Amino acid sequence: MVPIQRSPDYGAHRPGVTRAVAMRAAGLLLLAVAAACGSDPEADRIKATTMATYDPQTGVLSQFTYDKNKNGRIDTWVRMEGARRLSAVLDENEDGEIDRWEEYGDAGRLVRAGWIRTALDAQSAATARKAVPAAPPTGPNVGVGTPPPVTQLPNSWAYIGPDGSVARVEYFDLNEAGALVLTLREFLDKGQLVRTEEDTDGDGGMDAWEVHDGGLLRTAEFDETRDGKPDRRFTYNGAGLMVLIESAPDATGRYTKRVVPGGPAVR
Ligand SMILES: [Ca+2]
Ligand SMILES: [Ca+2]
Ligand SMILES: [Ca+2]
Image: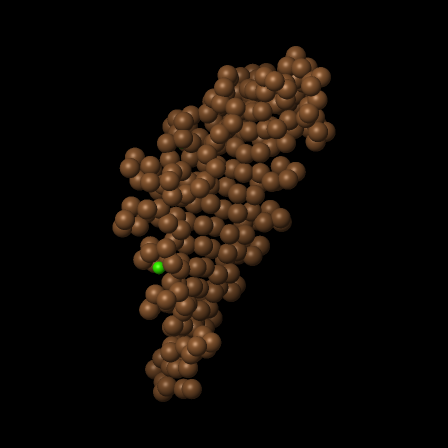
């Protein structure tokens, strides 16, 4: 990421900030980046791949590009509002199609990143676009640095917590009707998986739940009657062996039947 060090309100709502001023600022930024890098080819690469776009009315920076993998080709388009980062689209494998989406919250912190886990065919992609209210890479796609057109949408999203680690990952899949549905949610604590929710049959309702502890699966619950509530639970010990099967939940969800595998039924 090319850092942009400016006051948070740089250029915002100030009609006096002209394109010329903004261009000069961008030039200074490039010089600073080039000086920091210290080698001419590197400075040339940065200069050739860092392109700024400005709002023609206000002169405020609205987009810049950069070369994330440093091979001399632009692969990242960042939407800006002055000095504030709003979102970005990336073509990480440089095949001309966007394959990563990033959204930033207050203070430019990354809050959500989307990617394509498996490529969808054209028809599926059209369905996906209708199914997922994902933010398309809108913005000032004018002038220099226009990102490639979006042909697919992400089917995986990672949500980043305030501590910078991934707090949740959501996976979407095509069901038999050709609709893109959320099929798996993973919840993490400090980067470690703690529980999951899964829609194993793609009917739009979660029907399997897991609890993990210390990297181990501890319980797995299933909604076998598809009423949205679990009706069977498997419990595992630290060695991964199933030690308890519970079923027949009462109206409050409490299991009334308990079976120890290999042993007698207990209540
Ligand atoms: Ca590149
Ligand atoms: Ca790509
Ligand atoms: Ca289901």
